Amino acid sequence: MPNLEMVLNELNLAGADVLALRAALDRNYSSCALNTACPPFEHRPQDDEMVLLFATEGNFYGGSIQDYLNAKGPRCICVFQSARDAWHIKDNHPGLLSTAEQNGIALLKMPEKVSASCFFEQFSLLSVLQRSSTELLAEPFKRTCHGDRMACEQLSKSLDRNDIERFECILFNFSESNANPETDPLNSKMYSALKSEIREGRLFPHAPFVFTEEHDLVAIVPFASNSTRKQIEDAITEAVIKLEKKFDGRQLYVSVGAYSTSPSSLEHSYSTALETLRTSLVFDNKSVLRFYSDWRTHINIVNTPIEFQLIAAKEVFGDLLHDKKLLATLYFYLHCSESLTQTALRLDIHINTVKNRIAKIEECLSCDLKDENVRFALRMDLISLVYLRHIGKIEL
Image (cartoon, rainbow, N blue to C red; front, top):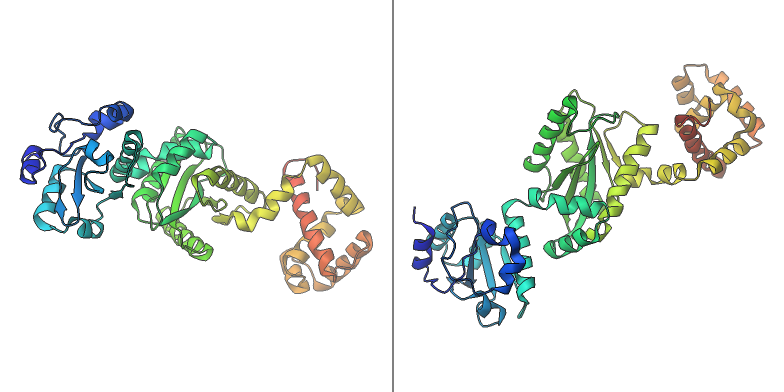
């Protein structure tokens, strides 16, 4: 296998710049930007380091970075994982740009003129994406989710792609406990396996960015700009079904935040995913997958100040708060779409008992349960009541 210098000589790139990613860009790309005309072969990248080559349609082409910045050189650069990849492309694919896309080679088309700092910044981020986007961009994603504006700007520049405009923040949790997935011995192995599966299992059209939070595993999943809400939800549902089978026997909870159309809205997506998991577990501890869009009403209600919820509960339900049987009947009657038969089955009582209780409820609340608006309002009030009981503010 030829070494890097042989490759460059063969490609007639005596004037091209060779940048070893770890030796230069990772250490301090801003200092490299001040010395744009790096002598060729100053560094000897190993086979696993990145190589930068200029290219025009169909041919490799030499030129310094300064030529490129002055708009005198070719208008495209191609980043290869190693010298071996560059050699392979040269031998087997003379139409470089047309075949690069087919072979998954990253291409970056630059504007007519760019500043040296902008060039190095974009190249550095492109290199990160080419090497291991799920690893090296996970930290900026994590900081962005926590409101770090600088990290958000970095992501906005690195993810400036026309085909990616949507992101979904997905939380994974193996239990309701507060065990730390990184340190708890019972959970660390499971979360490590889950993290690996999400990264490498090809569950989504584009590789997700995964990081660990205090009690959860977080995945930021990119989707194409033309993806519909149904397509995104279907893709997530299918991925979760596969994960359920993979981790059969463990209770897995998955919550999906609000849609994000840019890194700047990832903080909202992350916070809504957290709220969705926290709130939904109060009402449902069996379902695996929970979408923010399905739990938004519950979240808005439980986030109302507690003192207001307590006042409303006493005003709406009055003496009914002291009658567990009538409250349970009202809850299941509304939950079962006003079906007397289904309510009786859920409560394991006779249907006539349900009818009598419904009549008592209407009398106690001074309402008509046949009125759709009344039923809607009571459903909202019951959400608050269940939450108040959960946090110990009301005993039922």
